[in-house]
Figure (tube, chains in turn orange, cyan):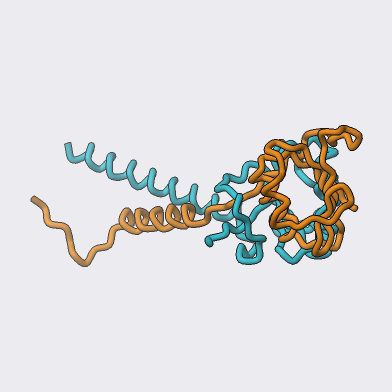
Length: 114
Length: 118
């Protein structure tokens, strides 16, 4: 049996290690997303089944009445259709947090800008 | 017999080389343009694979594709579009893009988030 030279580093070994490195690098960079369905045509405002929410900096309004965020979402009907009108000043984090809560109730959301 | 072994060895190194090229190209094509720690936190964010173009929107509403500033007309439209924006960005900066994507038959907007590890 031919013994492998201890000092010799073969190009195959380097290539294998580099592949391992890039594989690990690809696996580590995992992305997370919150998906918004945008293809749907806007939900009709006139429909009784649609809830009109307005999100401003620091407050949430349901049908023009200020609501307590901590209680509101837990009482929201599952699968409710929602028109969410958002003030331009609201931060993206606040929008995502609100969408999180609506997503938990499996609502169908239509985003609008105030 | 010896010749066969040499062929096998050279084809293995060819495969290794091609795999290496593949991962290198993958790394170049999808550069990490954005610091993920600035993304908004979400409880509902799910692990995802980015299938369409990834757009970065800065606080002024300027849109970037692969690090290059682009106009609305230059956005490569598909069924899915991923958007990166910092948590502090105002909705006013992002809303025109969402409206444009909606008007141009984009079905799903993937809002890139950071998982909430609480």
